[in-house]
Length: 169
Image (cartoon, rainbow, N blue to C red; front, side, top):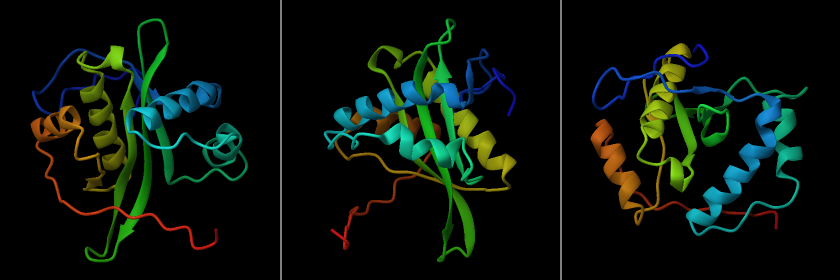
C-alpha cells in the first residue's frame, strides 16, 4: 500500500484520495490515546497503564510481529483521527488464514467524512497484499452506526457471543 494512495469507497466505488497509511513508531502515543477513546466509546475498561510500552516491541521493535499492522487515518494537517488494528489468524473450519480487524475507530468529529471507508479500503488492500481473501471483525450489537456502515460495505454478520477468560488470574 502506498502512502496517501487513492482509497475508493468499498461501497460506492472510486473516490478522492484520503490519507490512510501504515503507522510508524512516532504515531504510537496518539494511537494509544485513540485506543483509550475507543475503549470508552465501547463502554469497556480502559487499557492498563504502559500500553505503548507493551505495543512498541511488537509493532516497531526487536520483537516486531509481521502479522500485526496498524493503519492510521489522518487529516490534511497530519492529525491522526482514527486507526485500524490488524492481525493474521488461522481458521480451522476453513483451513486458511484470514485478516482479523481487532479494532476500527474514528474520533467522533471524523465520522461521516469518508475516513471509515478509506480505512476499510486500506484494510482490504492490506489483506490482498498478504494473499488473504477474508477479513473478520466484530462490533457491539448496540453500535447501530457501525453496523449500518458495515452492512453498506456488503459485509455479513455472524452473530455469536464473545467470551474472555483469564485462567491465570
